[in-house]
Image (cartoon, rainbow, N blue to C red; front, side):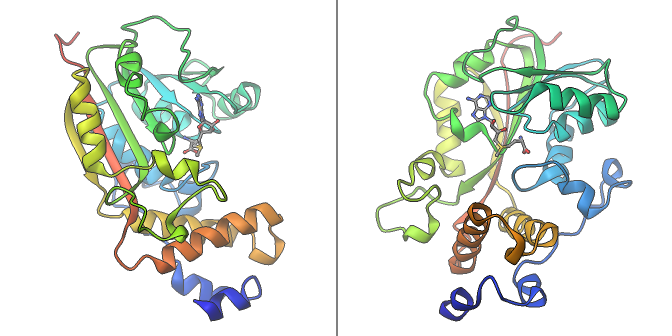
Length: 279
Ligand SMILES: C[S@@+](CC[C@H](N)C(=O)[O-])C[C@H]1O[C@@H](n2cnc3c(N)ncnc32)[C@H](O)[C@@H]1O
């Protein structure tokens, strides 16, 4: 590790690549026309289309359904959902520019299917009982740890509708013994405090009684999603050519993953249904 630290960012790409292997595009009919690069393009976090496609199946989407893509970022997930499932998507994000997302929507030929909106996930200005499904990739932990949030977001889902989340998680709850290399968001590490274990999330969801949990598991490829995202960053932009802030972030994640012999840092998928009669 010390050696790695002292040589970075002058380390050879081949060596970085051996530490951070590419994931294989899953044998999934919806992904058959996508390359590995396509699966990452436009996404801000890890997992990209691998996770969107997996969660879309679990949400049991049907053509014409209304889907909230909560924290859509660059709307790559919204475009995939509309294109492959024929659903109508509200692509919501607080910080992403909706005009840029509208340009992407137009370029994808999906203007009838996607409506980009600039909105805070905690202040949704849309009708209640409106969505058939809510999807949230790499973002729910920013606000979803609030005990009042799940009952809030569930108001916007119809009875029988589903919520599907894919997110970074820790395999177990954070304790004061966990080394600093596993914490995000230095120097205060506040973001790490909202990164919980699948067990924690299951209890958080079940205790609310707002939904019935169908699945809340550590993903079998969890660590690989992280490694694969580093690979994507490094391939997109050599460490030498990265902006200093980005180099710092990627380097921090590398150190975290290479220190993680017990797969403490991983991913979770969470699927739940709002009780009550379906449509
Ligand atoms: C890590 S990015 C993930 C974006 C996208 N889902 C993806 O996977 O590429 C997190 C996103 O959450 C959005 N976000 C964070 N807090 C939010 C909030 N309170 N309301 C709406 N969006 C929020 C940010 O603007 C950012 O686009």
